Amino acid sequence: MRELQDPKLLSHYLRKYHIQSFFDTRDLPFRLYEYAPGEMINVVHPMDESIKFIVEGIFDHYAIQENGDPYLIAHCNGFGFMGDLAFCGRNPVGRYQEVIETVRAVELPLEPLRKTLENDNRFLRFLLDTMAQRMTMSMHIRLDGTSAEDALLAYLKWRCPDHTIRNVSETAFHLNYSRRQLQRVLKDLTERGILSKTGKGHYTLRTQ
Image (cartoon, rainbow, N blue to C red; front, top):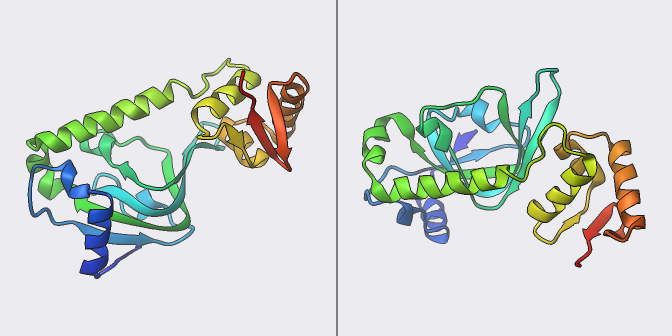
């Protein structure tokens, strides 16, 4: 991790993603940081130290299960926000964000600004909306006991913007199934006409 001392680049990201519009408070001390591939964002810069607006790059957000295996929660790219739970006094253990392609984040130090942000109505509304979106999304993540077929269909419907998967191994990792198990489900759904195979490892949910 390194801080990028480039005011013009910082201003570019602030304008591009309208970040200042999320706050009533003016002249906040935004900083721009860069994380290299392989770094764990929340390890080198813990969530309880800063709130982060991801403005560039790709990272995997995953949890470590009780048996020690990783469980992929999300493959993240594009603009995003991190630090809502830490701001609310919750910092789940066993969660990691591993950088896949160089990540840049516009950040604010949390503790020096906590009282200010707790009284910033626009930021609190932004925070509430962000958490509501995540709660809505979590309703579509499979629960224990859900069949592999239902889990895959929910993933295609709610987590894939074009209802298409392009990497069987990545999808199996995300759903916490083996590649062989997922291949059987894909084959069955394709034969039943629910999915269409559109390329090597590419499967699309057919419209009804």
